[in-house]
Image (cartoon, rainbow, N blue to C red; front, side, top):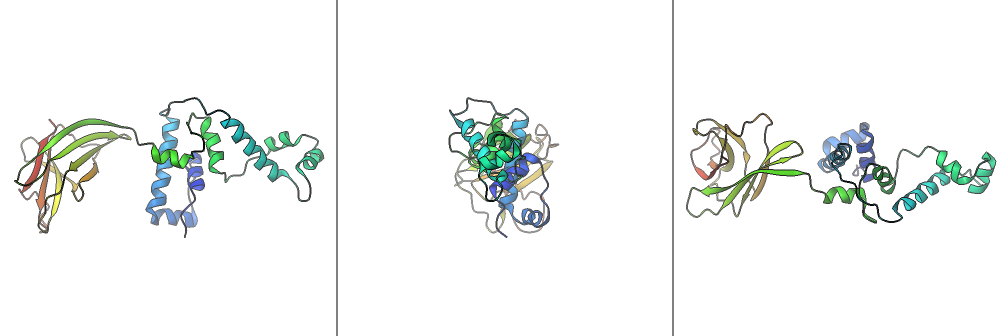
Length: 250
């Protein structure tokens, strides 16, 4: 099955509609379409939360949108074999008035969706669609803490860790110049308490830039140490004791 169209995903995000049938199955199986729908939904929610600052519209934008809507609606209202003027005359009113009284079709183009977004203060540059605007607009985030991770073995390059707040969640970000060899095991990221007794395994580090969404109830004051260790594939979930980087958020 082909991917769900951008128009349909954008409309569903605005309307809050549930995707059913084969589309529902497609969203369960297609990570790309599911991620795009979530991006539309996050943007719509930010608009409804007044997280988007209004700005002056490009000259003539609304006139172009209104003209397109009128043209589409007049085409829908026109009976077979009659001109738009003849159709309006049969109803006893001008074509433009008749078009505005018609209910718009449920499926709309991206430019029609832009018209709805204008009313909620979306700023769209000339010719730029909402899909492009969403892709270019990064999620709002705040850096809570940023530290250097000290290498604990020779020959290992520098690394850093940051805690950012993004869309209401805390994210641990690890950046490294290069990853050390794990010798057949994995590089695991941990948050450890000040006594180096309690620890939380955050996930596996398999790229020089990695992000981990932290549990909302995790107390970073109680687990301030960021640690990266080499873990052998031996089935033991506890820390191996072989750390390669470590730093303290405190």
